[in-house]
Structures are given as C-alpha cells and as structure tokens.
Image 1 (cartoon, rainbow, N blue to C red):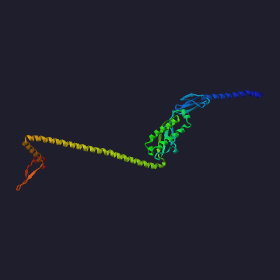
Image 2 (image 1 turned 45 degrees about the horizontal axis):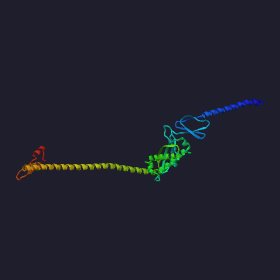
Image 3 (image 1 turned 90 degrees about the horizontal axis):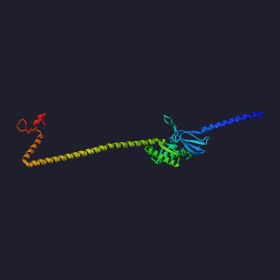
Image 4 (image 1 turned 60 degrees about the horizontal axis):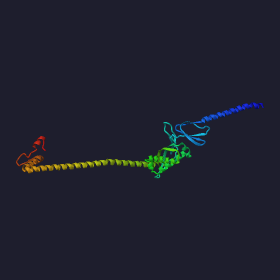
Length: 330
C-alpha cells in the first residue's frame, strides 16, 4: 500500500508533463500553421472545410490553424509552357538548353492536306488567369490544354499543303492555333490565357528526308531560273524602250529639220522671186555668177592639150592659188 501511495504522485507528475508537452506541441503546431507566405509570382486559394473562401495576394497572411484552412498556391504571374514533339531536359542561366533524345512522334507526326507526313514541333505558352477556375473547373486542366492544342494543330496542318507548312505558312498556323485554342478554353471556362503558340522545328520525317531535299533543290533551281529570267526581262525591256524613244526622237528631230529647211527655202525662193520681178536681168546675172562661184571650185584642174605643143595648157585653173597654199594638187 505504501508503494502504491508513494507511486501516485510521481505518476501524476509524469502524466502532467506529457500533457504539458502535448499542449506545447499543439501550440507550436498551431503557431506554425497560423501563417503562410505567398511568393510574388503566386496567388493562394484558401479553402475552409473544403470550401473556397477567398484568394490572397503575395505576402505573409494569417489562417485558421490545425488544417482548418488549407492553402493551394497557384503561379498566376509566371508564363508556363507545354512542349509538343520534344522535351527540354535542362535549362541553366547563361547556358544553352539541352533537350531529351527521346522521340515523341505520336505528338509531332501529322498528315497535311496533300497527304504528306510532316514532323511538327511547337510550344504553347500560357498563364493562369483565374486560380479558382484552373483548380476546380475541370479535373486535369493541363492535360486538357495539351489535348486541345494537339487537336487544333492537327486540324490546321491537315487543311494546308505540306509546302506551305514547311515554308510560308508558319506565321498563319501560329496565329490561328492560338486563337482557336483560346476560344475552346473559354468555352470550358478553364481560367487559362494563351500567350503565344510558337512552332519550333518543322521538317519531313527521316524516311523521306532525301526525297524532300531533292524536291527542295528542284524548287530552288526553278526559283533561280525564274529570277534570272526576270532579271533579263528587267534589263531588256528598258533597253528596248530607250532605243524606241531615241528612234522616235531622232525621227521627230529629222522631221522638224526638214520642215524648217523647206520653210527657209520657200521663203528664200519667194524673196528671189520678188527681186526677179523687180529687176529680171540683174537677178539672172547675179544668180548665174553665184552658181559659177559655187560650182567651179568643185571641178578641179582642167588641162587642154593641143597637137604640136610641148606642155599642157591650163584652162580655168581656178584652184591655182589654193594649190600653191596647200603645196599640192587637189
């Protein structure tokens, strides 16, 4: 009985110590769970007994302890991305990104409108616009986004020619895909805002790569020949137009000269006619002398040889003075 009596107080003290430790642990747990921190790029969705009671902004906040208030952090200010046809393995600051060597042909291989196979890799960048809708409107929002993106991209590529997808159609595909993905997400009320859709590598499958290279070479050769022909056209047409304009200008100048000369001769003839009517004899004599003065210098030297004479007799040697001046015969 004494041992029992003596053990009673010690057992009470042990029990009190355990209760005190439990209380301290509860207080510590309650203190720790009373506060939570939200990072600048995040928003916190607060649930109380499983029901959403609000959204908190970045900073230090109070909540009911012991798991009464549950917090779900959502990166609403961060640009997220989904990769299709490839996976980024490692991205470090200041270094080039490395990619997985695995093939994801089930995502990237597509059939174009002209029944050609194309290997398309693209990235969908998005932001979480509404945290509550993102978390609770649908069961797997990220998986839904991937399914929608792949479906839209396959439909757009399937409605275009393979040559357009590989060359000039990239910008159009990106724009249309972004608009259609956003429209479907709005219908689902998913709380996701599409930022951009960017196509990465767009190439034919490895099995048809040699044939595709030959086709590209043929197209490049065709373009080169077309460019050369266009260059020749651009050179020849201006030259021909210039030659035509020069010919027309020369003809117009010649016509103007002939007309002016004819007008001058007619005016001169009219003037001579008036003088002849006033003094016919004088005018005839003057015209005769002027004609001789114009014609005789052109006939050169005339020699008349008579029988019995040693040397020739110069006749009408009108060029004697000019011959002596130049030192020879004309």
